[in-house]
Length: 384
Image (cartoon, rainbow, N blue to C red; front, side, top):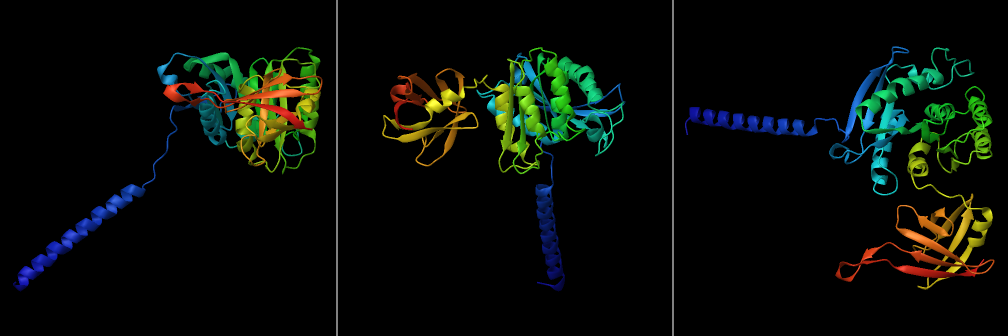
């Protein structure tokens, strides 16, 4: 091979290797380029309020099957939407498989940097910051009801009379404010770790005003506070005011969540909150009923388990496994209990003044020839 031939061959090899390297680098670069992940069945809108000339972002998360059907749906308004909108949208989609209705979730966000602190708390002076009279929760509620809600109702298949509101921290404060001032509009409310300290528990004064109207309120409210948060008792005081009021159609629930902080509680309690405000309309049993059921039971399949009460709730312990796992039992009718998310039901048959017989109907399973088989287990009280 001549010198020139060797040079030509080296040039061809070098060019080929360089080209291959470039192709590989390009492929690698293409593979690692970031791309935005879109949430299915979600739409973003912007609306500029005529009241304050500020622009708000509305993220609409539609339920599964919306695009192929004609049904109308309840709406849950969530503040702040970028943080909690996708979370509640996905949770409602999963739970709508049978535990709660399908829901349109609308996340509300602010484009103005001051809006969170100026729109959500009530107007006036506070030790934290002052809110001018032209801003504040009252004005933002007018924007929500007078501009945002008509915008959503006019573009989507909503049930205009079935609405919820949810938020955490100062947005939790606003969720309670919206309920207390528009109880006929918002029937489903989740106020997570609300900022009760604002204006020295101004929400308690609003609650007293609502109760004083002596008008029944058909709504379901779930509010909570983390066990790791500083707790000055303001939320418990509000809870006592609402639960002691003569409002027979109000279902108000407060949870103090152990081992949860201000930052984690909404995500930890979110599923329970959705179930509480949208799930089956639960019955609150009397303490005497709960105490009568408590004890250790011997089952027909030789298992032993116990029923225990805690915080006005009934739990079955050790029924589904040999460990001490605790599962809450819920009830909608006297002597009928169920475990949510599972097709487990417990029927109570009174036997005398202080004894009960239990029958568990377990998860249906396919049997021979495709027939559905529903196992049952009976149990008698062994000891208290």
